[in-house]
Length: 555
Ligand code: FES
Image (cartoon, rainbow, N blue to C red; front, top):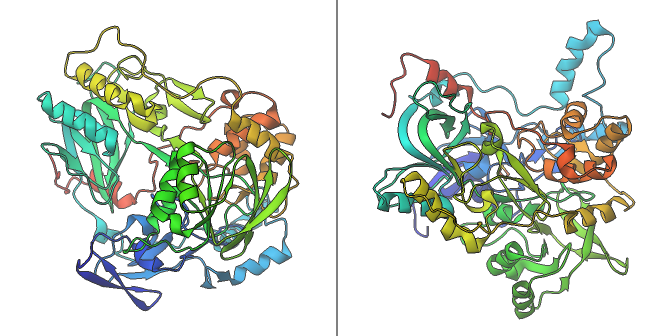
């Protein structure tokens, strides 16, 4: 990127610059951890967490359009960017004073219901207190309106990472012409393959036997172009993402996932922290040490630590703390230290730091499988749902395949799974193939043991169970005590999982916690099917699809 042309934009009236292909978040970082949001109920400063467009920590207003994710936006010359929801700044919002007046929080979900005649006025006040931004400026949405893309293809591959790319290349070799739908801002270049970049899709109901038997995928291309794809075969290669972790003050700015840390690197590859604690002892932690090891002061692992991490950490003289319970983070507009407890001896200790990088657990993205009605199975090793697969990596919905991390296929089976999918689609399936290697499925896992120990910890500070909606762990516990059972019911009662991330960050932990509270295995606690659209989509995108005047942008 060095030497690429710079673009000037305004951020809260100050002039900033960005290089070509640099995200707004990276441009706002420049060595200082950006805090551009505040939490909706407790008005706590919030920083970016995920770096991949799932959380709510980097929402800003761009050219009059609210809630634009800075990590998913490439600034244009002359853009006007402002923070939203807070005054005078997200680091200190005056409404945060309410926190002192209502230490238990204002119950916007269950309060404000009586007398009935005052409810409308209450709503107005509550929306002011909470809320995500304000409505777009007049014309801001209209300017986004673009002709939709409509395509009919033989094979649609959702995800252009390593697995999606491998399947696409094999299909081209087999004489097919797949379409790859990819979320990345800068799309992969795959020889002979059509790639739709910045595109997120959702399944419409699967074919019923009537019509042409194709699957319908509806979605949008950022910023606001509607996309409708009809495909005979769909290969889901949506990969995985780094999980969050439950502990006191887990929403403090500076607590980021590994992907989040990478997304914050500035244009010279420097992170906005100097003393990070890395949580995790596996391949993700190794990757963090590889990229930003100079800025790491400790590696803390809930369980054991892989030899590769031990080797790299000892080369960089970074101390290791295996089998440690992460108890709480302190700090206000920036994390200042991390309190831990050794799981064996029970010894407590604190590590001063300016960031906590979560690299302990990689989760699949199963939303498309749930939406299309594929049968799913719980795998205790990672504490996540994966699709039930045939030997040829086909789900229980014929025509829908899964490859890569989202299928839970281990790296050693990666190439084989891509080959089998391609063979099946191209009409030469592998017969009597050995089972594809996948992650552990068995009984109570190390993960469940970790949460059981965590549950016994005295709770200091706020333990945020759902960062998007500011739902506390105490509220989840209270719901369970009142007799609300199952994740779907607890979601409706507490609001957990109803925010912009659609439960990506809260559900995995909530399942384990509810399993403890309800004394039944996590799969019996259930799951929530994310409702389409799974990422916030400007209404302009859907409006254009219904507009007879909008000419189709594809064939
Ligand atoms: S959505 Fe941008 S950091 Fe999470």
